[in-house]
Amino acid sequence: MDRLSVIGSILALASLLVGSVLKGAGLAALWSPAAFVIVFLGTLAAILLQSPMETFKRAMKIVRWVFQPPAQDRSAVIAQIVEWSTTARKQGLLGLEAQVALQPDPFLRKGLQMVVDGVEPESIRQMLEIELHGQGARDMAAAKVWEGMGIYSPTLGIIGAVLGLIAVMKNLADPSKLGHGIAAAFTATIYGIGLANLAFLPVASKLKGLINAQTEEREMIVEGLIAIAQGENPRNIEARLNGYVH
Image 1: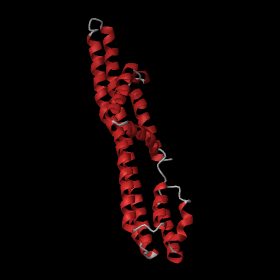
Image 2: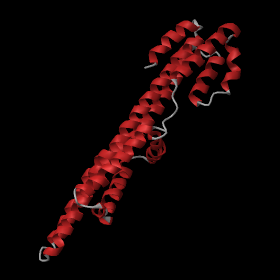
Image 3: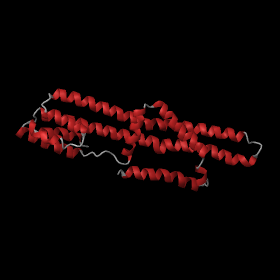
């Protein structure tokens, strides 16, 4: 569990609720069914028009990474690769065959299997980099779905405010309805700007960072597996891969 994401979410919600109370607007002022429909459904409609279905599904799937990021322990991965290189030098590449089925990561399992099968190092690099870049591109497109919602929601908030003001203008003959009508109109703006800056854009940024980190770790794995295939000294492999540890 990512504690910073949890704390940030709580503070984001508290900033709106407590701020509304301190400003004298009250919590009831933050609820508007009409604003909800315009901003939430409008943003959803816009992003569905923009995104292919598979990309949208991927975006909904990886959003959990914000609170439960994929496990990353580069030091442990380096130690494992160094251990494999030692085994390969003593027993040959076939000595790693038993390790293939034990790997939970499909990317690492596929790469190790190619090493065991004696595939040429350059071919290993080409095949793994194609998969690496393809997965990275798909994940980055999914992160941009959240970024897109952060772009659309403020505009939908303004549309909601304008529609609310139109309704107010129609009731100018009844001054008792003006104050409430104007307040309700600007609730849509709060929804749009608040969602963009406290939810959608931060989520997109967090996902992009996690995707870049995952891509970098897999690049490290590719370098390690190729070094094993080339029969490099385990100490040299460790020294090279340690450059990926920040």
